[in-house]
Amino acid sequence: MKRMRIALVAAAAASALALAGCAGGGGGGEEPTEEAAPTFEAGTTMAALAEAGEITVGTKFDQPLFGLVGPDGVPVGFDVEIAKIIASELGISEENITWTETVSANREPFIENGQVDIVVATYTINDKRKEVVSFAGPYYLAGQSILVLADNEDIASEEDLVGQPVCSVTGSTPAANLKELGAEVLETDTYSNCLEPLRNGQVVAVSTDNVILAGLADQNPGEFKIVGEPFTEEPYGIGLALEDTEFRTWINDTLEAAYADGRYEEAWNATAGEILPFVEPPAVDRY
Ligand code: GLU
Image (cartoon, rainbow, N blue to C red; front, side, top):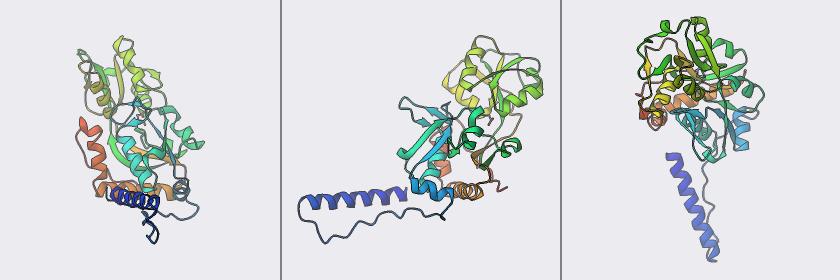
């Protein structure tokens, strides 16, 4: 906030000077002091992004509360706010963020081939993914849960999914967990595409992270309900290029600063916090 106020004062001072210039009364005035741009060690990803003044962020486009694209093509949600905090620490304003839709299955490839600079997309940190990308965070701890039709009385926990048709998403940890559990998994590309199969009885449940299911249930009042307790741990990380340790460390520092000064809580309250309680963030893992 303070940062923004300084920028606004600088902008006001600049336009006052410009007006004075038009009126012919300028001259002798000092240049308005601009907000000092953050400086980073040459050769780092931070320096390159700050210099470019833009960043490409991979996020979800169909997940209410975390990343849901609006009619203007710009996504909103908690993941989006986390990405904005990172961008702003690089001196990059919101208009200079390019949002790219990443579905569960293309997050690693998009990072590996440089299509995105970071991924903030309900992205679980795990060892398999760490073989191909790096993760800052975690910045949130979710857990896999179950969504059924509101009038379903048969499914109460993950044990009831064994041998049953259940929808989840290709390339996600919940899809892998369901297979291990012995469910018959119907895979689609996004969680919103699981809702029709649930409505028409092709599957008995949709299973993924509790917070994603909460957003889908909230978006469709009275249609669905969440059952059972979360049965996995899904720590959400920020995906970035493998072994870019300086960038990972810097994002971890940025997250910790946002935890300490209230920006994290503010981001939560403005998005997922509309229906989910605030919980203190987990400690970052500087592996
Ligand atoms: N957090 C899980 C994952 O990263 C499920 C959510 C998602 O697919 O985005 O696979």
